[in-house]
Image (tube, rainbow, N blue to C red):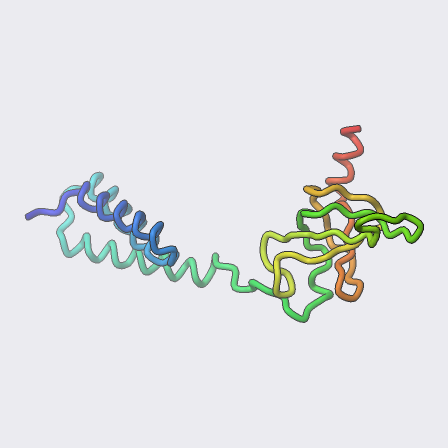
Amino acid sequence: MQILWWHWMVLGLGLALSELALFSFFIIWFALGALLVGLTLLLSPELSFATQILLWTVASVLMTVSWFKFFRNTNKTRAGQAAAVIGEVGTLVRAIEPFNTSVGGADSSGRGEVRFQKPVMGTDTWPCIADEFIAAGTRVKVVGVDGQFLKVGKPAASATMDATAD
């Protein structure tokens, strides 16, 4: 039996579907390698089976190594590095009222909560404070660390856009 270009495409799609079921983010590179061999075989049908297997192996290994060596972010957390968090941008999930002792209410502490896209100092959600009211859903930038709280403010671009929107 001769292996045709569409056999490689089916193998690639099957591997990609298995990646969706397993969530290993490892099989996808072998799926992409199979799709690459299928496209190569479509353009150049005279490749031998040994060359096809060699091309699939080399492409899969190169993509896997490239992912783990160059593209994958290995710095997932910044535990214990409070100064490194300054400048990080996140989204408020709970609005911040500026701290005011004369105002009573359910949450007069002025604390909000900011969520980051990737973990910062070990977690992706942090309690925060600010000098001004900032609504939930607003992008904020960390400007300091005050004990257990991150002090946040609006990023310069966001503040400019909000000012022009008024």
